[in-house]
Length: 190
Image (cartoon, rainbow, N blue to C red; front, side):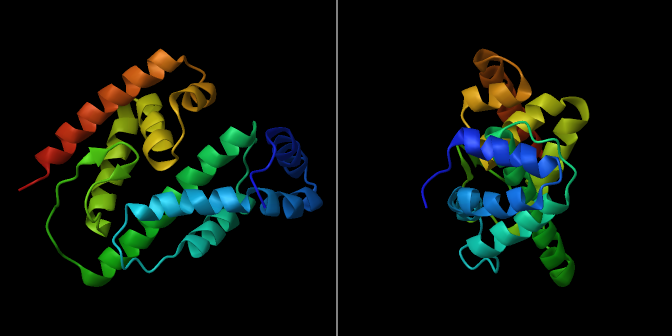
């Protein structure tokens, strides 16, 4: 099944929000392929032997989305939230694995357009997640822009639509956030 039409997806999201369970049943087949592509994008920056596969990531994220109380605005908003949810699933998975192995030093992170460079281990993902949380503590818009771009794969226009700012503002926010994150993460390298 190809990409869903934006208007039908938005309509189904609105119906789901109003409590129509049939809309939820109709939504998954319309968005599944795109969610799977999004999951594959998230997993492409993970280590090659990651225990989560794209299908499992989609299912875990979707289960969390079904239980969430979210006022869906439109299709773009849905995929942005889905991307953030997938990031949370991966971070939770990394924390669980890290708790199992206990230990290990900090690793540096290089942020490139659309992915983490190298073989991004759980430690790197956790370090980036903590840095994004710190950024969100004093500039939530920049942190959200980073999440939508680097984890969600959204372009500046789509991000601007979600954050209700212009494209130029999104681009400035991404440049500033990237510089801050690179500085923050390079300080963690021993």
